[in-house]
Image (cartoon, rainbow, N blue to C red; front, side):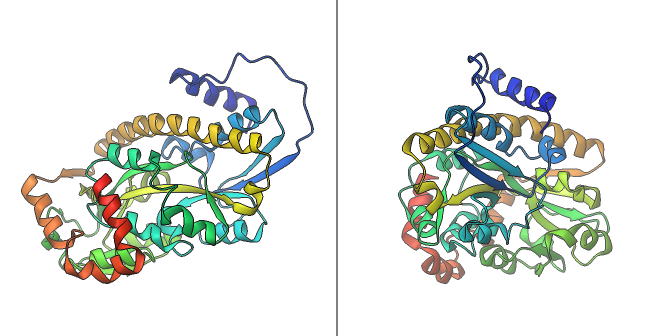
Length: 346
């Protein structure tokens, strides 16, 4: 990242009350440790999805007195989100950021966070991410058993997913019955597939890279994805209407190599964690501003934006909510006790 860009980011962090300037200049040291950090977003997409990664780099290097170098590889240059966790496990890289859904093949317990209508607001979800429940539950111990350490604080939460219907389909969705005959793009998430299967729509598995064309040509009619990712990839150009159903989230998690992190001196570990927590403050504030701007742009582009009435929301909860008996097998598979804890917190 060039120096002018770094100054802009640092200035933005200072503006929200977390100053990272004004420290005495230090002589450059040779880095003792390197964190190769890969992710799939780009600098251009930061105005849509705030990752906090560049802020983390600046702070982590400062708080470790430059003993640590954070070597960032963006834009999927080292692989997609299905590949990067494998590279962390293998020790080829030390950290990566990926969606919680894409992390589920490596830690099935994260499927629990995809259950529809668990959290009633974005604020409650963010407080959950900040809670000790993640670090003191299966959400931490299961990744640890696979060689991962969750980096608390360095989340990239794009907020509630939004339900977009293609211009080609030209339909307004307010209740589950409105999905009749529609092909809904889903990921490999069993929870997402089940949620759509409980409606009158049909789940269709489509790779993210092929989604724009699929929406444009009619291979799928609708999708449930975060506002930021849809805008960053210009998929919103294919959307005619969007419904804020608010059933689950589009959030990214940062994972590190447990072996690598555990082998670091304690003071370096503390510096990394401190940097992540401060980057999280920046991410939350910046994402809210990004969202406000994107909603204005979507409305200006002629995309119809629909909010549910209380009655319409009840219809969704009744149809696909977490208390449906069809969810029992997946609850037992992924951790019913933990889901109850999450639900109580939410």
